[in-house]
Length: 385
Ligand code: KIV
Ligand code: ZN
Image 1 (cartoon, helix red, strand yellow):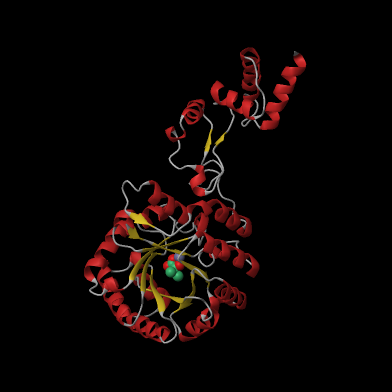
Image 2 (image 1 turned 60 degrees about the vertical axis):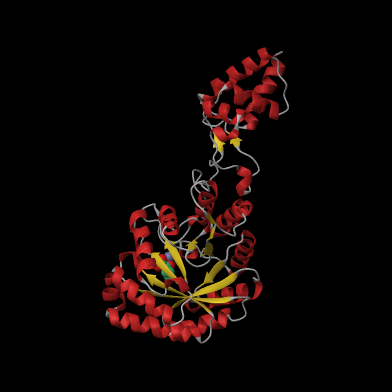
């Protein structure tokens, strides 16, 4: 089994979701839950970005003991110094420096030549190494960078002391084939690449963040980055819970494992949703309200006979108590009878038939029939007799 490290950036890239602003206490509660979830590294924030973020990163660094805590820094001495002050008391302090490598970013944003970018990256990684043992260097916009330039800068940054190289798809532009090919190329053409962890960081602008992350793993990534519920800048980041469950469920195909405690997924998702105010869409994979709900009669009948007919993930695996048969117009007699029994009623065949007819009439008017609706039907039935 190949071990894949999980780097969670809910508190940094996730907090960059428009409209999200976590206070220090909320950040600390999420950090504690991420530790229970078993992430290997958590990015607690961007210490130089504000006093509030500095304080939050420092508090998290001082509290969390079983997870490496990191903070983001631009490739400048002052960002690195501030990050060190925030992180130095962590059990395993770690720095995350980024610098863009794509022609579009180097020309318009950094206004630096490729040679100047190499020089800055190398000198800032060397500077960071005077304080931090663990230094991750991210080639921002890697997926739109020239591959040979990328290989040249990566080799030099590793020689300067970087311990993790991250290749972000910053703008969510790549596809699984292209992203996988970039990892394969870097593994093959950077002579010292085996000295470091190679990390994937995907955004979801084209809805491919999770697929791209898995493609990176298949092509040599040993660390993945993402957020809980896939929150993050613009369309968000790769949803960690989706990647983790995919690796687990498809272990017939994938030989990878993580340290994540999958049973903590639901609790982590709920906490992040509550504090960020970002609702989880009902149809979201793994954690959405409908992920374990069955509405059609054929599906309900199948699930009642054997859950694996229509469920590839057990709800218990991700910390959800049970699946949910939603009664609506597609539901059949079998699911209806099961629900009536769950509510404590043991009806004769004739009464059950009558109740089922009343229920079907109601489904023409109501999309979802609740337990209260069913009680009304069942009470009416008893009053009639
Ligand atoms: O998406 C990105 O490029 C980032 C970097 C700061 C790593 O979040
Ligand atoms: Zn990002």
